Every structure is written in structure tokens, then in C-alpha cells.
Image (cartoon, rainbow, N blue to C red):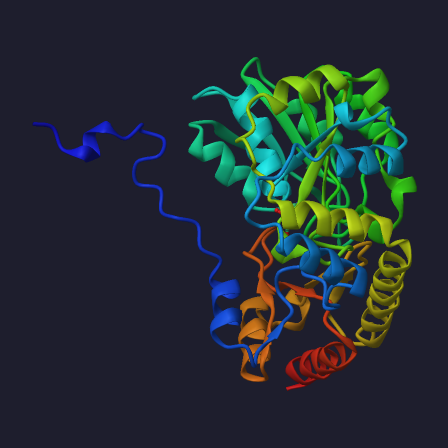
Length: 366
Ligand SMILES: Cc1ncc(COP(=O)(O)O)c(C=O)c1O
């Protein structure tokens, strides 16, 4: 008799369950301040809470395919209708579903690094090969490099993914570079998880009409502040979305998240409040820390800020450890470009942001 271990597909065997240690820590120790996972510090609006309560009473029923919320999403984005929208259990599931539709073992996904970690995880679990095209480090900033992405294309490339704005760098790629990549015809996923902070004018959704290989992904985890609800979506050409949706797990999005999402999407004032608060606090933090000598700030169009303190002579990992002693969970960033001073913060509430500023100033003045 063979051992069950011999039955696992080789690309799954040996891969550990993904656990975010910082999120585990935050739930285990609720007294710590969560400034690490790009969550929204503002709890759901009364309208969203009302929808949660209302549809909680129908939790004994299966959800439908979400035609109403998909229609609302299409309307917000100037698309024809629900056929242009696929829902997911967070945008992480949306990537998973897209990847499963295009990627066979041994084929390649190109990502632009540094970036969000889920693309790699989903690629690995399908036996794909992740190819990293690095951003350009220039004038103490990290710049998108569409030519590096194009140079990484091979006949095995099945997906290109770019986050816009990018996490952790917080900047946008130029519109003309999106066209350059879209023109290859390769499935091109533009991850717009944070785009609402800058406004939908910054979206690349307009590319879909001319380039059906472009898929836009979004989430309600960030500007809308519903990370715990798990609701994301993809926008695309009707036929493409239809085909990808065939691979969805039936009832992947529950009744409560679906209706809570609709309430959030209809509550324009609540979104505006969150966006305004975030953007003014980003400005405040960046301004407050601009006089720390040797600390490079990467101006953010989202709800996190990347810093590089290499030129202070101190390591980013030590900054993160110092903040944690003060009760703030920040995010370390592995050394890159020969520099080890990187760390990323997520915006908190007003008091938390001021605690952060104080901790950063104190760490670099010691
Ligand atoms: C660039 C980017 N895309 C997507 C997500 C994931 O969002 P979701 O909660 O929708 O799975 C994140 C979360 O941090 C992110 O940084």
C-alpha cells in the first residue's frame, strides 16, 4: 500500500498552510495597534451594519449569484452590466480563480516586485513558475518598469499581474505603460485594490473595451473598510468574465458579505469620509516625518507608507521591533536593492498615527 504522501500532486506537497503571523498576533493580543495589514481603521458604517443584521436573519438560505451587487458594480464602473463582473471571497480568491483558468504546471506568471504576496502563493499552488520583474530603484524612489516586465515575457507566460497603486510602494504606473503590456494579448491582471483612495479616475478599467485580455481586480477590504467580510471582484470583457466565472466555486460569496458590500457601495458618503481621513493622515505622517534625516519616504496614494531608513545606519527590522515594544505592529520589508532599512506602516486612527510618528522619531534619534 502506498503512503498518502505519495498521492499529493508535487506542487502542493510540502507547501505549508499560509498563516499571516502579524494578523495572528493582532487577534491574540487585541491591545496591540494594527498598523500592518492595510486594513481600514474605521469600523463599518451604520448602513452596512444594518445590512449585516438584516441578512444575518437569512443566513439559513443560500446566496444567489449576486446580480444586484454585480449590477451596481458595473454601473459604478461604466460597464454594461453584471456580465462584466465576477465576485470573489476577497480579491485573493479572484486571483486564484483567474490563475486557475490560465495557468498549467510549469507555465509562468510575471509580477512586478516588490509586491503583494498572494500572486506568488496562488501561482505556486498550481505548479506555476513565478517570474519577478523588479521595479527600478532610481533617485531614491521605486519606479515601475514596463520594459522589464515585457523583457520577462516568454512563450510560457500565461499571466502578467501589476498592482496599481502598488503595494508597498504606493505609486501608480503610467497609463501608456498599461497599453504597452495590454498589447501583448497576454492575460493582464491589474490589481486595483487601493484605487478608491486616489479616485476611480485612476482606474485602467477603460482598457477592457479594446483589450479583452485585461482584467481589473478590486476589493472592499481597503477604502470601503470591509476586510473581514471578504468581498472582492473582477471587471472584464463579458465573454472572458463568463468563462472565468465557470471555474468559480458555487456560492463562493456568502449572503451577508454580498449585501453588506452592496450597502457599502451605495454609501458614497461613508466612502468619502474614509478616503478623506486616510489621505489627510497620509499627508500628515509624511510631512511629520520629512525632517528625519536619512529616512526616505515613498509617497503613497493608498493607506500604507513605505519607508527606507538605510541611510540612518539602522535596519528596518529593528524599527519594527522597536515599534512593537510600544504596542504598534508594523510590517518589515525584506532587504532589497542592497538596502536593509525598509519597513511599511498602515494608517491607523488619529491617536495611533501620532504614536507612530513619535516612535519613528524616537527610534531614529537614539
Ligand atoms: C495589492 C493588494 N491586492 C489585493 C489585496 C487583498 O485583498 P483581499 O482582502 O480582497 O483579498 C491586498 C491586501 O493587502 C493587496 O495589498
